[in-house]
Length: 369
Ligand SMILES: *Cc1c(COP(=O)(O)O)cnc(C)c1O
Image 1 (cartoon, rainbow, N blue to C red):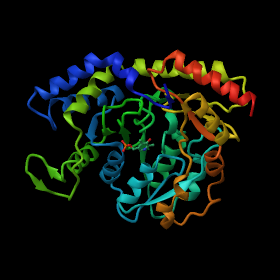
Image 2 (image 1 turned 90 degrees about the vertical axis):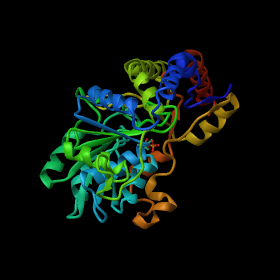
Image 3 (image 1 turned 45 degrees about the horizontal axis):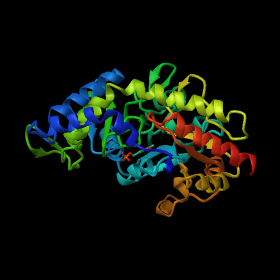
């Protein structure tokens, strides 16, 4: 059987009865959109984070689009983020007519280099958008200080960091608001698309609730600001509620997989993920590094192992973002790492047998490179 970076079929086998019960519960409830399951999930997900509000929506990209609008980002504003991210982070900024501004990343943890942020602030800057990539948090204290000093919004992209902590504080609870994705591969994944924003700010939550519902305040059915249709379906909300009860178990399982990789590969020349001090990593992706990355990936195919690179093309080098005016060479660490990193299979239901197959194949490939 082909080994992939992510696969949900084992999880479905393990949880099938509960997932099917969730689907049946919704289908028999008489309400398929914006019913009890969405309300229940929002309450439970907010409570998990100790936050006042969770407002769900149809995917993580729209959680950023609507979330940025909800905190007041407007066309022409600049938003400081990174180029080593999933393209939707940047698409979301671009989509509301704001301008993404990139800083480079750290060579150690591949996350936003916060030392470069202050120099990137201009009179047009409105928001700092750190991406807690791969499952660990960007250094948030300096960003919070800069947001206060320059009167900026701090908005966290938590699409890869559900449950991650920094000095004990959960990802998504430091900034004005935070966006999550429940795309199936994510640390908390639905069986389809889903997203949410969390915030402690009543006005931001209210804005988001309107924006996902055409821009209407529900009770009046009058559009106040032209919005979107961006609702989470009941069926996904109910599945997410069930999975949230098992969530801490998923995190423990992922950490165990990471530990076995460390034990099985720690003595090779492969660069393994570095955990920055104070961080609890949730390993959305297990990202390794090697200068001969492409050759390793190619040779693993003969073992029926297909690996991915996240992300092979930094966003600022993509043709769709030429209008931002970045040239190759603008973000040297981002560009160098994009040629060296690759992801090993990582998900909570990954079996030890499959992991051993990956470890053994990698050891053999590395020995004969
Ligand atoms: C997955 C992801 C998104 C987008 O989420 P979707 O649910 O796929 O729209 C945004 N940012 C990051 C960092 C992601 O990994």
